[in-house]
Image 1 (cartoon, rainbow over the protein chains, first blue to last red):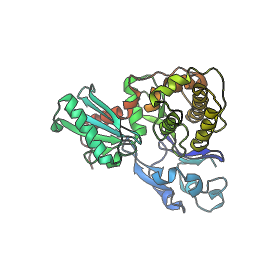
Image 2: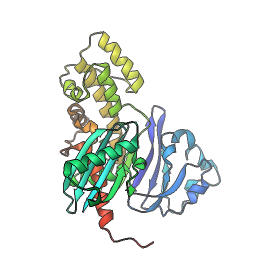
Image 3: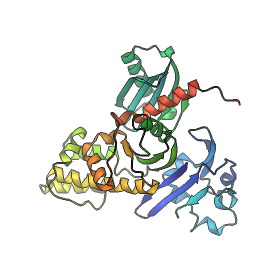
Image 4: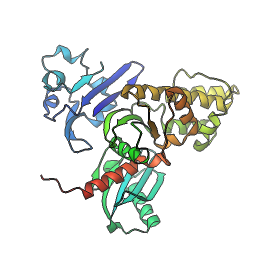
Amino acid sequence: MQAFYGYDDASGAYFITIDTEKCDGCGLCVTACRENVLEVAEDDYGKAVAKVKDDVVSRVGYVCPGFEQGCSKRETSCHSVCHRKAISHTW
Amino acid sequence: MYFMGIDIGSRGAKGVVVDDASKIVASFVGDTGPESVKTSEMVRDAMLKSSGLDVREVKYVVATGYGRVLVPFANANITEIGCHGKGANYFVPLARTILDMGGQDCKAININEKGQVTKFIMNDKCAGGTGRFLEMIASVLGLQLEDIGRVSLESTQKLPFNTICAVFAKTDAMSLLKKGTPKADILAGLHDAIAVRCLNLLKRVDIQKDFTITGGVAKNQGMVAKLKEKVGLDPILAPDPQIIGALGAALFARERALAPAKAG
């Protein structure tokens, strides 16, 4: 499943996409994220996968600095630690 | 044996009971009150009463929707995304894309032939384009929510709304009304703006030819007509699009109750 978490508004599209087919629920992204955006939880079909926390989804554009404009400049990010390339950002 | 699904939405509370063969034996639609716990008990009791079932005959209960964690008698809770996928697959097996238009948010979901979600996107940040927004507009125009879709179809002129921000659209609608603009045209303009917004969500999941609309707003014929126009596809509608989430929950309940216990 490709899960899009976020929204688009007048300032742009803010979606974090997690491919749950690729994600193995290892949780490295959860610890890599300094903003504490992610968690690992069981999906509707009983598989433990990474997701954006429920209370973050509707303000993700403010909480998460984004990848292109933000965390790509950091040494570690949810992208860099994910060995399965399951996470992507629209900004 | 019977299995129950309870969908506590932001505006409406829905329930469905299915039997061993997945046949629907009871369903219910009411308002979500201020206390979700009481609301969920009201939905359960109404369905037990209408079907004549005893609470002990219900083997498994799955709760879904915005208030799903507040259903004290549920055995499990499952997101409304998964439930809409499963529920839509029951009535419209061909559907591969679902647009769920609820009281508080709008979601586009792609499913496979088993009703499992392959892609989803939701927009729950903005009130524009939700059932709650339509309720507000109906009250500004002095109309019943049930009637606004039909009235919008009587429109004779195109009225572009450059925003569907709930706050601004309300002000715009009020000033247009004062100028004597027909209600039908105001409604058609707003329905148009909402449909465009939904289309953006649908494009992002890569909309498939066979699509269906679920949720309370799917009962609005003006909205369905606008979506058909914007999307360029004919939606296949379920007999009662509002109970799809609860139905999916009931089907999940059946599946979980009948599945052999998982090790660990």
